[in-house]
Image 1 (cartoon, one colour):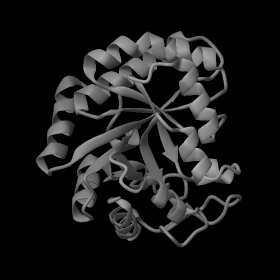
Image 2: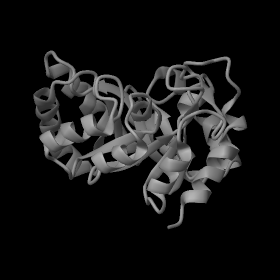
Image 3: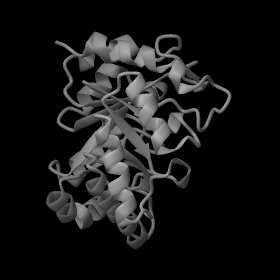
Length: 256
């Protein structure tokens, strides 16, 4: 496992501050939320992209993934979705990220297939992938697994297992892990008060079955990112208070 921290937990702080936080707490990389608030978005020019990438690499970090907001299986016209996804994927390639997180946003599997097909060649040429998160309309591993099986382009797609959402929708970690078999590319870790109250809690102090998730992921070789949702819950403690617990969790389950 390689530990990243999402800039979702550092609202308004910018890339330079996120880099310092990641280095200070022994992270291997950053998950960059795509939003003007973070200083990273598809509107960056070529020189700005180089500056962001070099600033991160200079401190020995990597860009684990970009956290975008494209809704890959939402109903409606394809053009805007495809254009936005292409722009995010180009940014990912320029920053050296492994790929772009997308949300389902709906359950139109045929639309998802069309849209991924439209960017598949770009993904192959630039070495980036489309990562579908267990979220919103398709919150379980079973649902995201079905989508990715239907799209059937494993070389350019992958699944992000957000450990909160499948569990709060009644899917056990074991079932999620099984359902995402062959697709699992990235994991977002977090804890919360309960399945009904998703207020973030430091790792191990909430109700998410993190021990079960860790045992299933023991020896996982991909990125594990702490997604501390302070952007949405501004009254919770700063991410600096939570990162030591995330680092300990990753260390505990990093080896087989």
